[in-house]
Length: 263
Image 1 (tube, rainbow, N blue to C red):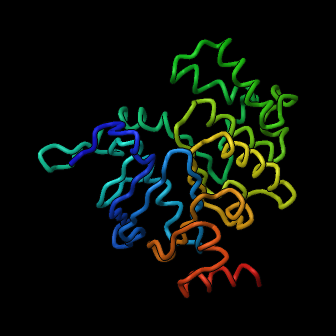
Image 2 (cartoon, rainbow, N blue to C red; image 1 turned 90 degrees about the vertical axis):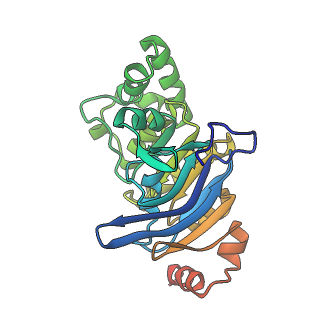
């Protein structure tokens, strides 16, 4: 059965039910089951190639699932179900779904020919129809929140990697998403720039933003996550609070992974 949108006050923000994803013969996701509640921060950890980023891309239908069900705020992602048969929705309808899901990638993906301010106002004006003056006012508020109001007229080439990533986060938040996805947002940064991006993400979490974060930053996961999911070989191996998974893992594969980070 397809779920009605906003079925109840108890509707999870994200619900994955037996989600599979294959690229040809390669099975990347092998029956993922997990739930993210509104206002919750979930951190996905695990070795490279475990399917974390692929799952994140499935949540906003940048990748199509092979089998299973994936819901965001009660809405079936990427498909409609009619008489027990799944039909993929149009790219236009998929784009409408994505409007409510912010995503921040490893690479900053800013428009190189636009200033920080122009990068942030682009989508609200052209996709949501926000008036330019209103979009600029909100963009300046967001730049101030991420500590970059003084860089509003700077182009990406004039910004450090950490500054570019903070602009990318502000750009995603400008669309007022109900869910934010972060795909290893600090992995491309020099170590001294990681902290400034994590601080912005912590502020978002404190503000009640629902977030799924793929990360190798265990300190961040321990401090900010409500739930930590350890994935390996396309499957969820262990899930629980940061204290359960990071401080007292039960599965040998989790213990092996965490011990490898300490070497």
